[in-house]
Length: 248
Image (cartoon, rainbow, N blue to C red; front, side, top):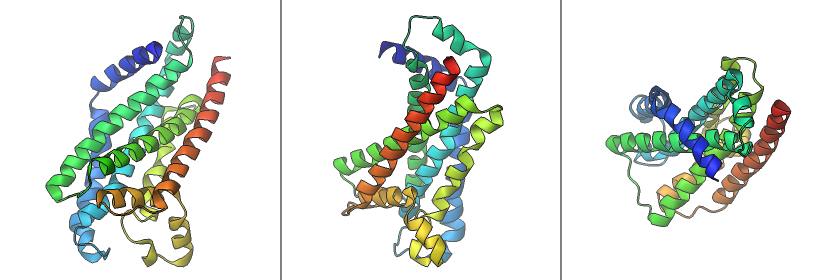
């Protein structure tokens, strides 16, 4: 744990010395929030009077999906710089190097989420959620971040170029657009609707939206947690296997 703490401090110093990464990550989701709220919002029927409330869960997921690309990039640069070999010559837990990057992603994405929530409040976002509901939202977002970050570790270790390390996140960023994040899935044509209703983002968005509105979450929260936990376990296994091959 002490080794992880040291590696987390190292990675966080890189982030604080280059705050443009957090700024870049937050700009695009905020742009989507403004675009859908003030340009498309009047033409989209969601059954709610506050479209900003409807948008917020999906925009938060887009921010996280965008932010994890920097984890892959920073990890790739560490691999190419040779710093990993220096770390491995020291008496530290080898896995702490990866966990430092992963926890840095968790912290930096949490900062981005808070910034976007503040912008949402200015735009009219309101929630009747209690303390437990907010803790539930935070838990889902944290688990989602961990799952995608361990997924990002894989290209960070295996890519041959910086662009290849970070480009994998593009499909993840656009996945919320084929979900219930911006429009109800019932308005979509058959095949698209089937995909939208059975992909992880829809369950996660629906669970967070229900928690924000202090409504019963039903099965959505369990489906969301199952997706996040499943992706996390599988991604962690593949990431550690790729890491062991790199340091062998």
